[in-house]
Amino acid sequence: MKLQLALDDLTLEKALELTEKVQDYIDIIEIGTPFVYQEGMRAVEAFRERFPKKEILADMKIMDAGYYEAEEALQVGADYVTVLGVTDNLTIKGCIEAAEKYGKEIVVDMICVPDLPKRIHELEDLGAHGLAVHVGTDQQAAGRKPIDDLRVMAEHCKKAKISVAGGISADTTAEYAALKPEVLIVGSGITHAENPAEAAKAIKDSMISAEEQL
Ligand SMILES: O=C(CO)[C@H](O)[C@H](O)COP(=O)(O)O
Image (cartoon, rainbow, N blue to C red; front, side):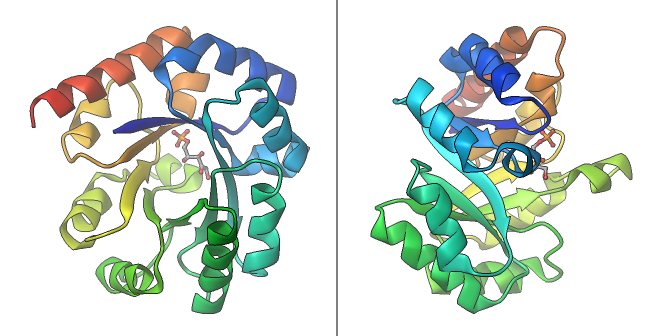
């Protein structure tokens, strides 16, 4: 199980600083969507240069122009790029094609997908490498959590790597880790914590103990 740190609402300088502090506990650095809006591909490049051994995900949430937009991030060092599950299959296919040209992977963000089991099967048939259960920031504010969708995903997903995101913190990691997704994504649970390194360590420890209970 990998821990993905989502960097959403930090400046480039602050994000680099924070990542230095938590790097021992994280496996994937996510350049979050608001961060992409703010800094563009410059952020992917800066992290690739500063953390050459870490995996990097560009949370582009692509909706159109799949091949072109995915390639923007892949050509500057992203290992994973996200595309929205609600978009057209042609866009998904374009993203997959671009990723495979670079030997990298596409993660499909399932936010707001209405019929999860049906779409999981379609996306697996298209060859999506990863599927991400995601309850977004606005939905979280309305009280939603990704745990039920993660159960549906665990039941229906046969080949793709499963990740999960949406308000997960050190206090709630255990219930998500128990369902054994390949990737657990944490943003504000680390970046807004009083002590981000302590929070990241607690989350990683909880993931390790869930794996030991296999
Ligand atoms: O994709 C995102 C927002 O669209 C976030 O990166 C993701 O939800 C993880 O952040 P948090 O743990 O704060 O919910």
